[in-house]
Structures are given as structure tokens and as C-alpha cells.
Amino acid sequence: MLIAENIARIEDRIQKACISAGRKRDEITLMAVTKFEPVGKIEEAYGCGIRCFGESRVKEASEKFDGFKGNHQDAKLHMIGSLQRNKVKQAVSLFDCIQSVDRNELIAELEKHPGLCKSVLFELHTGEDTKSGFLNTDALLKAAELALNTGNIKPAGLMTMAPFTEDAKLIRSSFRQLVKAGRELEKRFPAAEGKCRWDVLSMGMSNDFEIAIEEGSTLLRIGSAVFK
Image 1: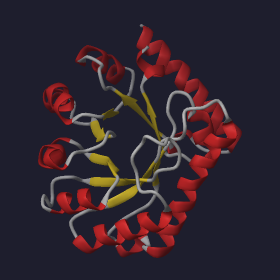
Image 2: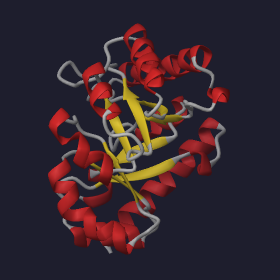
Image 3: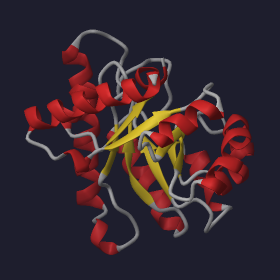
């Protein structure tokens, strides 16, 4: 029952954060980050209503989710870790979304496999020095233009990781950078053109998801708070 209790506590916190921020609960997707977790625990999370899962490594994801997704047609799997170019072909056939598009070389590699990956998110570097991501909005805009010119990649939004700190001001600053970048992308590449949309903001993890909700997150990536 531990996972069920954990998810119930998380849901209660999400609801309270939504009320505080004047938002609706159905605006936000709760993803369970399942890296290093066995299939049995993933089944438990699914039984508690989780339908979106995140993995960081292609090999591990394939071992766990090839069969799982076949038996759970409504489950969605997102790639949230750094993706190596030589793993792209396998990744786009397995994942429903690649969240960690963080460099132009990866965009070029994704272009070689059209029609497989359903959506991608561009990762913006806003916090951790050791983390990947486009370094600023200008680089992000250039990458988005490159992706849209390919005609095969369908951007759905942005993702970031805030610095791991107890300083709420730094965390908010990180999330606000992502929101601002999303607005710039909407202006430059209107979703009405049908080639993209920018409504997904993947930000917020176990230690900062309530702040993320307050700042506009639409997708929370939560691992330890679910499974530990």
C-alpha cells in the first residue's frame, strides 16, 4: 500500500497547490519517474491511476516497457534523460515523447526517423551547472526553427530542471525562465500553423513540484515521492 499512500499524499499536495494558484487539477499531468524501479512497482503505480511514466535510459526502458505498454494501451512513456544519437532509432520506436531534446545534433538525428516519435520537448538549461539543455532562449529559438524546417519533428513544449536547492527564489527563477521562453516560442512560431504547439511545460520534481504548479507547470516528473 506504500505506493498508493504516496500517490494519495502527492495528489493532496497537488490539489492544494492548484487551489492556491487558482488552477484546475486537470491542467496538470502527474508522471511517475520509474528509472531503477521494477515492473512490479510500475504496475502498482498504474493501478493507482498513473498513466504517464518517465525513463532516463533507453535500454532499461525497453526491458521494462516493451511488454508493459502492450498490456496497458493507455500508458504513455516519456524519455527524460540525455539521449545519445546512436540510441535515437530505438528511442523513437519506444517512447511517446522525447522530453530531452537538448542540442541541434539530436534534432538532425531525429529527422532521420520520421513518423515514429509522436512529440518532443526542448530542454532549456535554467539551473544545474551539470545538466544539459539549450543555454538560452536565442539558442532555443534557433533549435525550434531547425526542427520545424525538417517537417518531421513535432514540438509540444519545453522542459527544464531547477537547481537542487532549498532557495525557493532560485527555483522560481528557473521555472519562470521556462515560462518566458515558452511565450517567446508561441510568438515566433504560432501553434495555429499546425506544425507545433507549446502548451506542455515539464517542470517540477519531488522536491519542488508545488512551486512548479504555482509557476505554470503542466507536467510534473516525480520519482522518489512516489516510490520511496
